[in-house]
Length: 469
Ligand code: ASP
Ligand code: MG
Image (cartoon, rainbow, N blue to C red):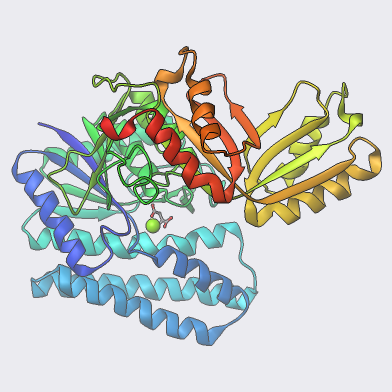
């Protein structure tokens, strides 16, 4: 009997109709003998709305809140009425939704009073998206005569540290607890419906796993249960060789290794939470990306050992937009240990994340790529901290750039891949501003002008004949 953890993202549960569709899908697998654990995200866009509500509460905006509460309740009641037919179950769920929203009201009122939004209270507010969506999915499953029961991540045993906003699971306790809780339910043919994204500390304080964290919840549970597979149901058929909006002939990838998929998620193939593959990778549990609106398609399977061999060294090409290239230069940096550490420490303390780094052996400059919206702040922070000390001469930022990332496990130890990539680019007359390849050799990334980005992606896609796989 196959044990599958299924995660349903925001679009999968965007409306009552969609939730009904999801419930039917689950029921279908259960009737085929599958044991299913469902992990559910907030209804599409709700987490963003909760962030806004929390910010408004901090500013003391009571009017905003009153309207917000009404709309949120309406949205969920409407979904519940469409997703659940049985009147008794419907009423029961409505009651739960109302009580939950009353609880949210108390939290937001508290924030209005103190005028302060701590990371801890913010996580509590953000947890309501999943607290509201999960009962509707659970109700819809019960409507289809399944034994469904819903739980928060904390209730099911997911324990984290107290790094609010981006909490990390304490895997040993978590695995033990989740198994103890869920296994008996599955034995009894129950379908546990678990809130994605939210968990709790050991003292039972609500935490969140970071945006998009429902994927992570699913793989944590999958690892705890030693599930056969974790299925990430989304609104695309799977991971592709490239963005079909850029390369119309892009193909779906039937199989990828964990390492390749990790490279792709980090480089903006926004399909997954960046840490979501970790628990699955550790316990060797295959993860499948599937389309909830096209369940006939088997999707992309992410595994440790690949069985399907694809023709060439390169598997996929992604384009990362909205970035800036920052260049720090000065002869004072040459042969001075600790320069790089200083630069990255300053940025780290200012919460600026670095996507890509390169320094030539002359040591006279260090370049790195960050999110574009942070580029002004990065430049001024570095200037203030470093210019006066004679260590560096200049900090500049270029905002009109993008990163092209070429991914594939077959690139490792294969000579000539880089030369083919850059020859293909050169043929189109595109200039490369910066290059980085980690020694894992799984990913070659480079920076070009933003206007050249799409053309660069197409040129490489063609060079490696990815439309033929
Ligand atoms: N609702 C959360 C978010 O929007 C978690 C998720 O969707 O995975 O980030
Ligand atoms: Mg979401």
